Every structure is written in structure tokens, then in C-alpha cells.
Amino acid sequence: MAKKSKLKNAAVTIGTAAGKVDAAAHATAHKAANAAHVAKQELIQLGKQVDLLKKQLKKSTQRLKSALK
Image (cartoon, rainbow, N blue to C red):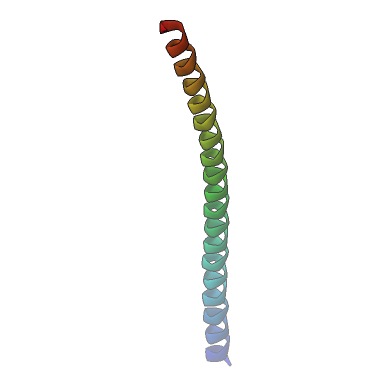
């Protein structure tokens, strides 16, 4: 009976370790997904800012050209 108890304890220890590894991997994947989402949102905002700057530059260029005429 003692050997079965030791085997059972070893199996429980292995199962616990596997569960901890799985939970850590899941948490890491979740953090990575959140980081990717935040980065995507930041890129979208940067794109909008670049578009606004292009628009401003175009207007400024037109004003400068008409002022130089």
C-alpha cells in the first residue's frame, strides 16, 4: 500500500506542476494578446495623426503658394 501512496503523491505533484505551467502559459498568452491590441490601437491613432498632419501641410503649402504669387 505504501508504494501506491507514493505513486499517487507523485502523480498529484506532477499534475499540480502541469496545471501551474498551463495557467502561466494561458496568462502569458492573454497578456500578449492585450499588448498586441493596445499596439494596434496606438498605430491606428498614429495613422490618424499622420493624416491630419498631411492635411495641414497641404493647406499650408497652398497658402504659401498663393502668398508668393
